[in-house]
Length: 186
Image 1 (cartoon, helix red, strand yellow):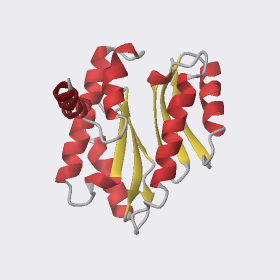
Image 2 (spheres, rainbow, N blue to C red):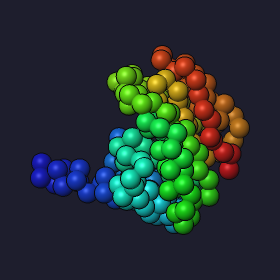
Image 3 (cartoon, rainbow, N blue to C red):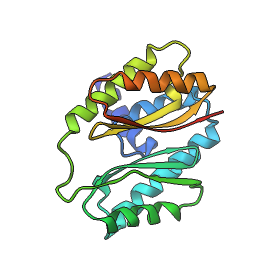
């Protein structure tokens, strides 16, 4: 049993091909989302290509950029040392087949910008738990990242009321300084 769990922990991140800590959970929950399996497969391929191209890049350090891919839309968060690196990240992603929108929310921070990592991880975890507990919200249809107290949310809601509920829940989390809403209504 332990060996099977260990193997699952090794395989799921590769299947998710994503650079965020939520990769394993995302890989498991995609079957219940509003996205089709074809959309999930396309997003997974895009995410894998982003990671591969960032690893090859001389202008951007792969570890600096977190990318969330949702229905061809790419939300990039994290911090990069220069404006040139931020521009390079957008350029890299924009040339990948299937990308319909690049949302570059990278922060320029020459020192790395890692001062709030623990707080940001706490915000992300709390949002997940709060959304799961919120009636009329399908939390598996959303992805998010917190960077220095700014919460970025992307995904599809079934109604404007659901968007309002998601944003209200997010606004009540301690440590959230601002919210960038990239939600769409289906």
